[in-house]
Image (cartoon, rainbow, N blue to C red):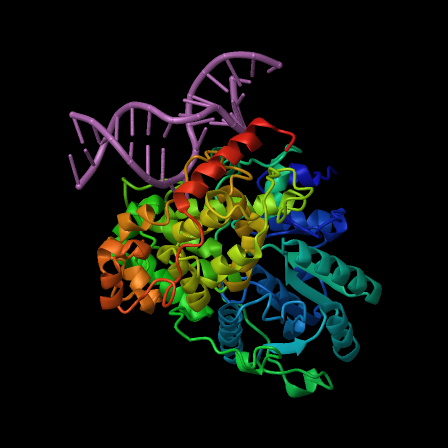
Length: 548
DNA sequence: CGATGGGTTGAGTCC
DNA sequence: GGGACTCAACCCATC
């Protein structure tokens, strides 16, 4: 009898999942997509889940706040004699300084929708406040569960958290199952395909890797049969329903205009996706080209705005991929990665793989990909940027949109990121990344870090003399400044001629527009043309002197 | 190893 | 109005 190594399995095209750092054959689970795999699995590994005796099972939801195409949920329902759907509100995240209002609201809406779906099966989402290891220990003492299922996560905090949980559960004798479901591919499978090589840092190389690996797994089609949850099952555990945001400690009194047009939840996600794939009988999908979308179009935005749903797992990225593929297959002429919609999913996958494999991906120090640039910090400039008080209307409108909506078009993110870092203010991308992480409803750890490095020319991108102008760039898309007028009412009556540079307006024009510079709206904190020239010179120094 | 070609999405100018 | 060229000469992957 020959037992294939993990690597050989992967090269055979099988999707093998297991624990993060322990791949002994006894804990390998093969996704039984074909009867052949099922056969091999049962014969050699005795680890087909059907061979596991049923027992009380906890499914710990973190991302993947959905019922459809949820491998973890499918596995859990197969294992469960009784199923506890659990969500832990970790105090690490309950902090308005770290997770902004809109971001938290969006996640709670996703939880609420999941709860509603579970209720159709006479189950519900059990919400418990507390540090995860402690909460799971307490649950174990009350529920005495045999299995814990959760989805692989990739950011540094989550990986450390999950490691601690796995260790503790092992001590308690609970068998843990980790499934992949948040990315197109199981990232460990992609790592296996790297053959020990370092991961690609350019899109073209990544696409070659993907071509080797083949298309991602299809979404799960069968609906899970979720076992009911009864009051006596919960026992003495203190559980709550999905809270409203104002019930969360620290968020009680935050007054935020609820202008965000995006509501969280799986139902919203699926509806939105259907609108995308059906738009213009599929023509919209196959002609989509990211660089041609408009950062200033608001109603509707020029992109899909599915990212927040994918980020929370309210929408399965695999389902979206295959729905797009279905549309693409009906057309002979279509846009291609990296600019197509599927290309956008590849960007996400690419950055997830990098975040998973590159140490300290979210910072400058000890990050082998990140160029160390001698950024300087000016508190007043940084604050002006964050608060939308730079005196550059497009920047300020964008930062206002960030706070009010929790979402910006990709190119808008480029412009404000460039402005904060190499373009104007010469402040570290790490500072900007934190702000995005706090406010964006689609704030995604790997993708956020990668794009900030990209825009600041710290990695991936090096043409530092290409600097976004906060005046000329938006003018191209929105000559009348409707975007600015929407988010900055103070400039609503400014003539189009001066909408992106109001400091040039004669005093009479300012008076007529009811907007006096220095009183109603700030003067620019820096002179863009000067800063741009100065910073390009600094960049030349950085790129010439490799020791910097 | 050194040469080569490519890089999702700037801005201004010229025709 | 749109395409080509230039700015200055980068990194990275590949062969």
